[in-house]
Image: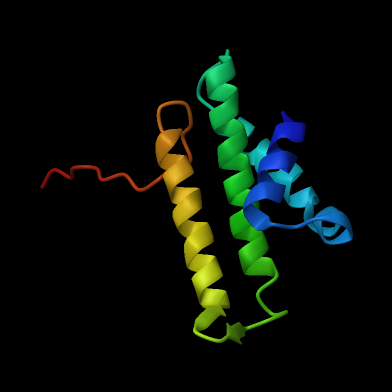
Length: 117
């Protein structure tokens, strides 16, 4: 599964070569995190694909947070990209993948409990 996570992480982060190797540990950490929070004992091939996508998305989000001090913004003609844009994109990807895996994972989200008076 780690091989699939690495491939997906490379695709969404656009990292290659040495730069990819520098950050690839995020994939292993993210895959372990997702597997620790998986609620199903046996995963189908479909579920494994979703788990790999989620782990890659989490790794990309971590990359966006960790690597933010390198370049704060970039402008070329009419195109302007900032760290906040990348972080927002990474966060949207991660939450979309978390949502698609909500039936097989439990990350301990917010829960509301009733209180009797």
